[in-house]
Length: 50
Image (cartoon, rainbow, N blue to C red; front, side, top):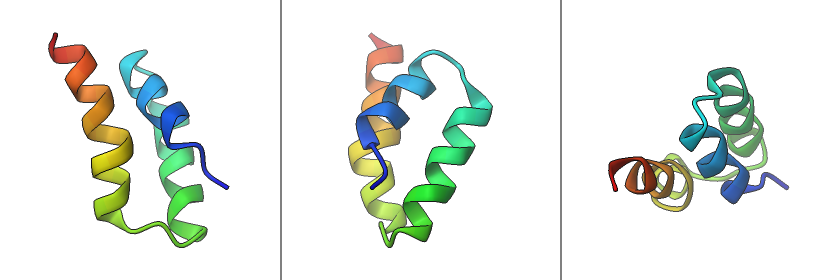
């Protein structure tokens, strides 16, 4: 199962390839794009914005 926390952390650290891979994995596992945004990407962006 895709680790959405790892997605957020990879985004925070600027690891583009890891973010792309984790997104692809999560989509293949059936996660919705909205779920990836809410629980992964937006969390990482929130930390960057602080």
